[in-house]
Image (cartoon, rainbow, N blue to C red):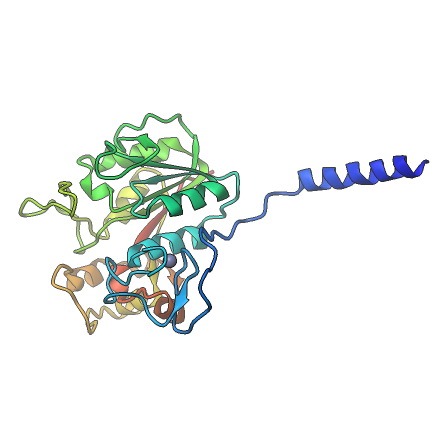
Length: 287
Ligand SMILES: [Zn+2]
């Protein structure tokens, strides 16, 4: 065989091996570190490192000075990457993401990412989408990330049924909502969030069963801090904000439903304490 023929065969073999290789799981790093590594804390979204986050330790604060992620943004992102194998071919829908253009573009560079909003008024997005009646084909998505949206949707069951429908078998929903109390109830008084969106539901831990009723294999993701308190039935965090009824949350927590995705060391370096503020549901559509 000629040298050229040999080289061609080698190249074809290498190409075939590359094509047959399963895609590598992606470590999602939307932004490259631009500042020198510091000590203390680290943002899991943009990899910023520094002495401390800005503001107090609270899920709506503890702001990353580089990407603007607040506590619950980092928790959402961590729950995604610790529970779902994301590759460049993963189709992911994020509903009303709080983080802006830089984050969205970075996500789009790394996976098949679409963001939606109910009416494109409160948030800019790629598509308008009503979670109760999604204009998406059956089994068309691998992942849905939805943070602090479901409480603004009147019909929870319709939204959960739609999420189940549009996910592929083996697909996941990573669901965050405010959890101010142990058991779901409508607000006693009319309640609105920052952008004047009405709140229809104040969710509790019974949302686990709601997801299961719709067919999802469901785990309630939490930090080690929350699991310890739940197992000990101990609502005695040193810093309890009045918006949270932590006694009823701890009371409603079923230890068998909990999956710890963050130990104490990581919760400290990512600024995700106290534990009662960081809960998320992972619903897996059996496949
Ligand atoms: Zn950041």
